[in-house]
Image 1 (spheres, one colour):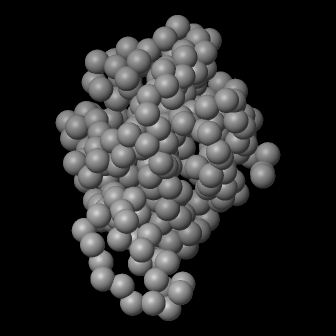
Image 2 (cartoon, rainbow, N blue to C red):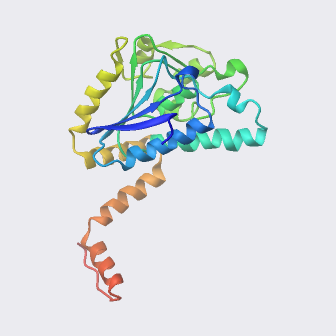
Length: 257
C-alpha cells in the first residue's frame, strides 16, 4: 500500500489516513489512487465495523492540488481529474461500513467534499470548512454542488460556494455541516470512542440501515436496491436449492422458502 494513504486496523475500527502533510494533504492523482486502494482494504478487512478517515498534520485535506490539474487540457481535466475523483469519492460514500471524517485540521474545497462523502463528521474547534473554488475561477467538482447539497442543504452550500463563507467548526455544527465539535487535540480519541459505540451494534443491521438511508437520500438507489434484494435472496432456500441443482445438472421445482 502507498505511503501517501495508509490503512490500519485497530480492533473493530479501520483507520484510513491521508499522509501528505507538507501539502496539507492536498489530493493529486497518486493520492486518489492510494485512497481508492486503502478504501478497498478497509472494506475487505475482516472484523472492521467502522472506518475513520483522518489527515496527518495540520490539515485534514486542503482539496485538489492546483499544481496537479492546472496544466491539464480541458478533456483530461474532465476525465482524468473530475470523473476519476468522483469515482474515488463515490467509493468512500458507498463503503459498507459507517464512516467518520476526523477533522483535526481544515477541510476546504475537495477536502470538504471528501468529508461530505463520509456518514459523520467530527471536527476540532479551530477547524475551518468551505468551498473556495470560485475565488480562483473554478467550481466544486467532486460533488460539492450535489452530495453536499443533499447532506448540508442548498442554502448552506450557496453560502459556501457562491458567497465564499468559511465556517469555523462551531458555525459548521449549527449549519449541519459537521455532527460534533470537540476541543483541539481531542478529535481522534473522541472519534474512536464514538466509533466503538457504533461498532457494538449489529453489523449487518448497521450496514443495511446505511444502504436504506442512502436510498432515501438518493445516494445510490439502483445499486443499493439490488444489493438489498440480492442479500435477501441469498438467504433463501430457493437459492441454495438452485445452486445445488445447477452444480448437479438437475432440474428442480422451486418452493417459496
